[in-house]
Image 1 (cartoon, rainbow, N blue to C red):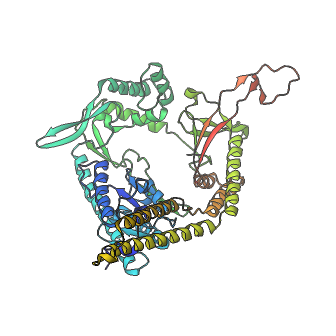
Image 2: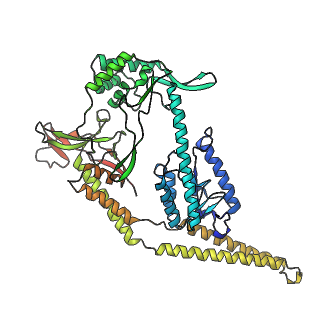
Image 3: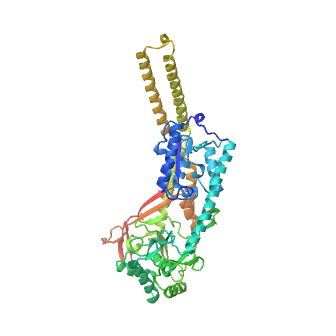
Length: 548
């Protein structure tokens, strides 16, 4: 039997963290904000009744993004980092599965974290103390129940979705370029479908005509549309990627596709991750849609035949740039590694990093070696900082705070005992045994003032409790990434994975080089000489966001 009483744990609102999340079990007609607000009211009412006050706003975490696992939810990750500190003693949720409906790996991680940080999990019905075996079993059953419900719900929803798609309904949240998303009535049902947007549809027809009838490539089609002042679906300019996707989009002939991008689970370097590769035509289901076609089937299939004759080839499908997915230009586009080779396969020029939209943003490129040297220095400086913190960080500060907190809590208990004793003496049946009213009032006011001061001191002690930081683990992580960059023989994919463990994003900017009129004999400085003359090279500006 789990405990459903709180008094023995001696908790106060500042000791507790609140976690709020909407799940599939909630009313689908309610927004995330409405569900979280309702749940927050339930938890606030519980806290007022059992803790004497609501949990502070700073201790509340509201998950507004969807996701089945801990890795998909940023707010629960913040909460799990905080419970490492002895300052927090409990997590309050509406029900246990709100913490995670993930697999057994997630369940095991939660059980270990709550158990070894000695953190309670509290719901309005039960208190789970994972130090006790029976409580651990119950907590595990609650997590498994949540995962089973999730899998069952997904199965039912997928079955209903497939039936709706087979009837020709369009279930995508965003309409393909050339259409607007609309609802039509069929009997008593409202069905989602597409309606032609004539202005955009004319652009779609132009793209198919330029490619198939006038033999124009995707890049040149993008340039033509930009020259005509036609606004791109996303961004300021038409990309070749967007053009190719449109040329192979079967919606334009009045069809609906299903399972074009299936979620696939793969194992790489001993780790499980999910991908959503785009299926080739013929590998996914196609149904007759309820919407009108923009182009003829003859033109569409002629386009597909032409695309298949000239597929985009890439000899090396592996990662060749250690900074892939990390380095971004100031315009928001990713930066790619360009390798320049001569006819014999030798290096013609040093590798460079170039913005994928450089023709539009005109940000100057940089040598690959320049950027790698900058990243190495940042990693090295971070390692030195971790070493300094390891040397200066001891358990003394945490132990001091814990002793201070315990002494203040003991002092508060003594004051409360004295307060009760005073009131009991003042309510003695024999009036001669009572204090004069003015003396009692003076003593009581003095005691209440002292009580408020001790409560404020306890609050400050909790708020300033040092957080446990594992600088040793961070140092090891950053050192592995630095060692990988220094190893010329190591695979770029491995380097990329290790860098992503340390770096969240790198934002790059650099002014365009200008032609220099250097006087004879003048020291070059940042001036370089090329076949086109002397150039003043501008410095690189980067902002590296580390995962610390």
